[in-house]
Image (cartoon, rainbow, N blue to C red; front, side):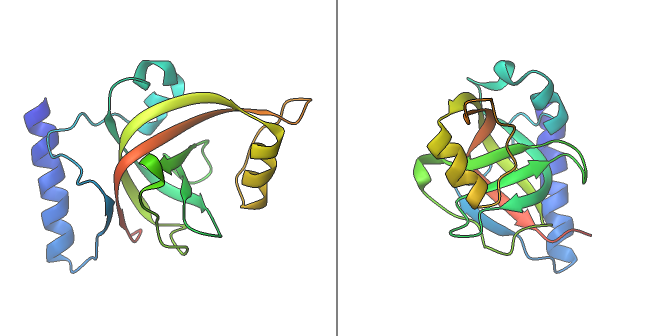
Length: 152
């Protein structure tokens, strides 16, 4: 299975290079033999993916409008997604990344955001479901590295 995932990843990269498609890389390189899990599967049971790094693919539906310090990744347009942050605040994505296709390697996190944190993220364009006290439970993804390309 790992060999098939690695070959698929290499094929996609080669096809992008042949097509002249620019791949924007940020953070650590995504390992070709990393376990690829559909984003929808991660969202169905996020606790399962909280300790082991996996690779997810999706479309960027929102991104931080101030620094590029997070993105919301969805399996496909109109579907629920996950907010992706970048390990140790170590890299950012371009501010105009909305609509790009992204591949990210990292782990899932689940936490409760304070009202102040939720307010800050809402000001940057994040979509949150708030609790009555203004806090928000958030399932997010902390990426070690990402690859971005324009959507077809």
